[in-house]
Length: 181
Image (cartoon, rainbow, N blue to C red):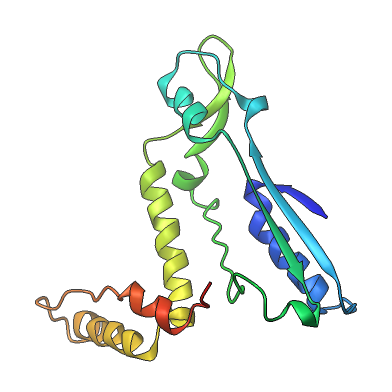
């Protein structure tokens, strides 16, 4: 069993999956189960002051959790609700505007809390865009990839201003590549 906080959930999932699958330098042990428990709890960072940028984190980040049971047992192969196909982790902390978006600091009265910057939504949108761009070629059907490529070539290579960037149809994606539940 592996218990992690919210920021390490995906990393721990990938490592655990590699361990029970026998990937990398790990020896595969048939019939293994692994439980990954992810928790989010901000009790230690609860802010009692009056700074609005720091009060908002009390509302957004509260308590939550998720659990994933992984197995390499052959009998479990036909029973899963979801099958992990691809994982993507984007780290934007190297950029100054990303690094300073969520920051633990003291307010004017000396109370410690988590401060959220105004740029948080733009930074989160950029990270989401990066994740979708990375996952796109892995999950989109060929027809959607070709439509996107066509619009990209017309806009960037031929410099056609009348052509809008094609936004892929995600319901088509779900039916073609994602496993059913």
